Image (cartoon, rainbow, N blue to C red):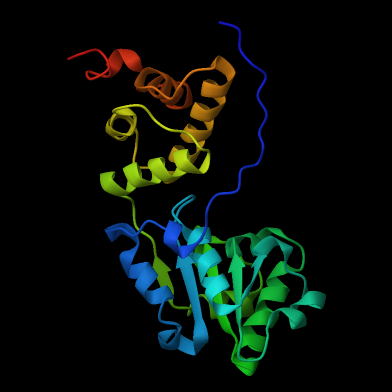
Length: 239
């Protein structure tokens, strides 16, 4: 079968609160995020692995609190003053990237102090705890070591399945019978892998002009991980 030329159109996922998938893995962290009045000194760090939902939570929280969202690696000292509104809110996503961008650590340190002086709620999101960021500014490292942390846990099978359904829907893909269940059986509970997998399924289905079937989905998983595949799926083989 001739393959069609495909294009990555940069699809934007749905990031509203209604689009977030609550689960035991994220319940405690979400509860903390939703009670900013309980954040020590009005600051909270949301920590979780890639694709765990940090940016999604940060996005809808920012919308609800009128907060600007900035990336850690994009922080600059000369722009910091304008980011912390009086009695307002600010979100810093990928906060761990400050350690790898010129001037970003100094900017975050400045924002830390400004948020206290102006009563600005400061929500940060990162893939790891501050001790693992590689910070070189001692004053910032000592302050980040004291920040309250909300952690997103590893997903269970139910959450992984729900995330796959959402990612497929974001790309306007309708999976055939048993597709999601087969993927959940065969793949690691890794939400970053789920994101890459759905992108691969989308590319394959478009290139080959096929629907999203179990064999197509499991073959996509096998290409990404070296595991799975139609031959190893008892349901796909009628077992």
